[in-house]
Length: 126
Image (tube, rainbow, N blue to C red; front, side, top):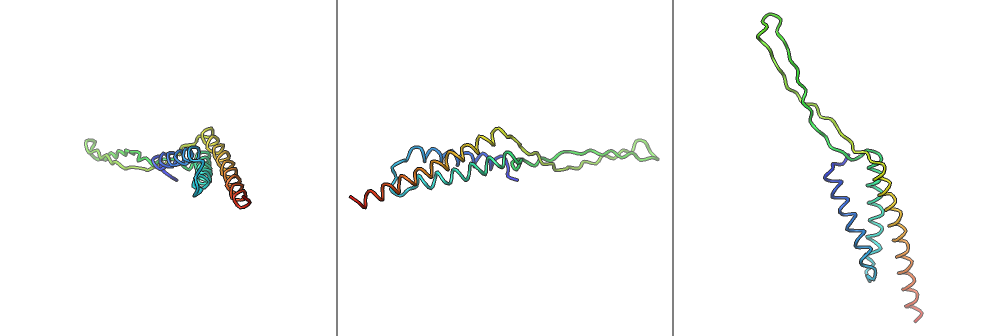
């Protein structure tokens, strides 16, 4: 299970990949194809993690136990213990949005790859 902070960092990295792919469409080192493919895989991971509940936090919860001594009523012992519970964040709608973004970025990576191959072939015949 990944924490919410890690989830937010992954979403920001995914947004940077998507923006770089959209902005840099004439790159000679084909970084836009690599970022489109990386954005597709990262979006799919984020989407599936949101649907499956793989994102969440562990939270300590206080358990209070009071023990009364049978011989003396004034002798009360209170014990404080903590139990750690996991709170998963499950959001199917947001997960499907990220999966849709994954499909779009995968298609964009394919189209950018085809365009780059087309340019290479045209350069050879000129």
